[in-house]
Image (cartoon, rainbow, N blue to C red):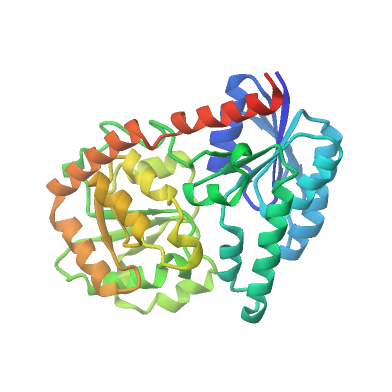
Length: 370
């Protein structure tokens, strides 16, 4: 089978989409798969070789030294296909294509919109940088053999004939623990999985918890890191902080254990540009574990939640609205259990990686002619 090399400068070695879904799927199919990534050392897992490059100490170093190290490692492998996952690696993709290589660009974000939300970039510069990035991305896309869009909103930005949709939906059974703790016996725990920051509604959630009546038992367990760490100091004195449990980074089995002892999941991102049209993986992961979902009331998210009947939506910028929804979900366990069952059915029928991986494999066959 052909050799393929995946490359990322931004994501961790065992990123769920890149490693567990795409690389492992390709390896199980028989491809010779290598992932070049910033990591402490080389490794091999699930049939995928990890080739390490030095971890950067800053964003600038990541976009220069790390990117250069990835290119050197990639070109030395002479693979049949190269597949990269970060917009900052577009120059590497173009260089590989100019050397006659087959190249796939996996688009995770709306690049121009994402730039508008970058706090480290001065606001006056953001429109210019966003326009330049938009143009560079579109010109570069003309060179590549395939474009993978990670959500529907990204498809229309690239040439139709070479672009496929591969949603970041959950793997069936990965996060479920049948019989772990019966739903009716679970404590009133609300789960959040992933990195947390100000744009993801961290402050508003803590404020909302302080508005939930004291006689309503409720805790929010956060399985991920808070960025920046100093953000925690800004909310520690709020009344709702006593209901928060920071678990830090969790392995996938640990995430599964949390979801199977929680009563519901929460994902209340604020409506910034890059969130409004995003397809939140967390919603589908909660559904796959049989949890009802409390989500932001952005139009796309509201449509997903309401059409499937799998949870509630609320204004993420209004702590009072969040508090009301949180209290309802604690006080209506039977309704929540029914929502969770609908979520499992919907994932089994529509929102799962088995369906998405078929499109990934077909794209590879089209490009490689095999």
